[in-house]
Image (cartoon, rainbow, N blue to C red):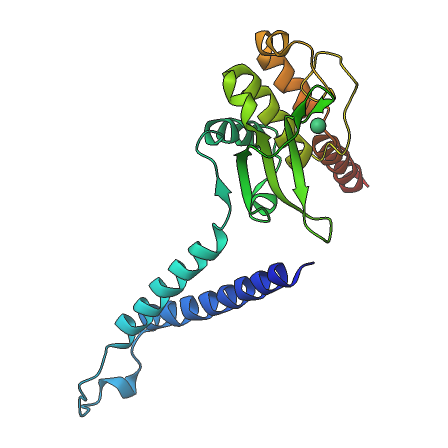
Amino acid sequence: MSLKKSLSYCILTFYTAIFVLSFCLFIREVMVMPDASSLRPKIIKPKTPPVKKNLFLLCFLVACFAVNAQSVNIDGRLKPHLDAFFDECKKYGIDYHEKLFKLKNITIVDTLPLSEDGYTLGMLQRDADGNVENIIINWVTLLDPEILKVVAFHEFAHYFLDYKKHVCSDCGIIMAKVNTSYFDIVREWEQQVKNLFEESPAYQRKKKLSVLTMSMSDQ
Ligand SMILES: [Zn+2]
């Protein structure tokens, strides 16, 4: 794990601990009923009310936490496809939040190779430790919205659905290594997405786990 990432996790853990602590303090201030001693007359000193003070601290920490947790940059041109992909994840019960916040960028670039010898329409970029930090898509996919959609889902599936390799070389599905016709895939899009999710390593693992849990609870 890189130093920057470790530091980021430490900060996140620190904020979480402070957030929980301050939330508890806030709840205590609001919820605790006054005891008998507090009903005795007291000399009132002008000071910041504790509830107000804790509320301010709570808001500050929530803001810090939110800034820290949402550090992934998402290209606006990919956002609708990412949202559609996450809707499918929800449908199949696949959690994506943890993986999403491990990324730095989901973006369109002009640095991927594009020549007669070969081309790359998208890829996952890793850091020195081998952890995925960016999902990048070649700018050339912007020339056709259908191609952009297929390539985006292909790269998202590599990362979020754990497709470590391609299903075939050129077989007319989203997880093929190359596709001669993207338009055939788009024509039967709903069925393609269904197969993509149902046959994914992430969903298969989840299914096996739930069968195992069920058989254990039967014993
Ligand atoms: Zn691929």
